[in-house]
Image (cartoon, rainbow, N blue to C red; front, side, top):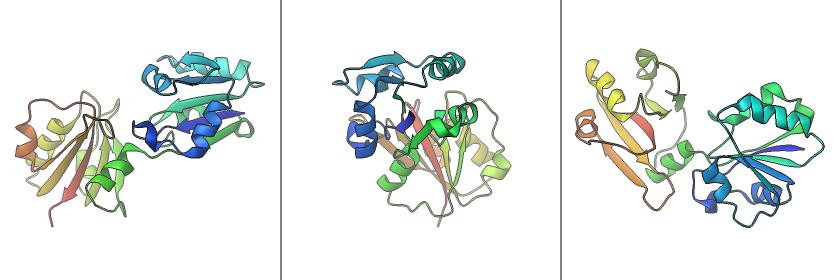
Length: 202
């Protein structure tokens, strides 16, 4: 069986019991370097996930007789590897175990419900900000090209009254959450790895 397991936002305390059980009963665990380091006591084979997903897919397809777990941060079905693998591997071989996403985590930290939230990402694409900012509640997974500063400028261009929440290094010891108007966010020189929430001002 090929398990695709979400590790949660980062802190190992957020891995589900089921996910943890499946990981430690696997023959092989595939994941990013940082994620593999988080399962210190695993005695099976560890394979570092490369940027070439076709190589990983080929390995999995050639080893369907093994018990393999692919681990990923957050939830693998929210802008994660779950989509790619479920499109390319027969579902009878797959088992996806949800994890707590960074999106869920940040909403819990700011005490805002996720009802009716619009979820999107800026990874590898130019977002449609007219559409995105028409929503009252948005959560965006960002990248190095389009992040808090760019989002703030787009809000200013449209003269919208929005509150922005930037969550950096969520669930780690150096976690930081910044809440403010676009001008407050633009005054911050740099943000680490982050997720952005955009809310209509009440």
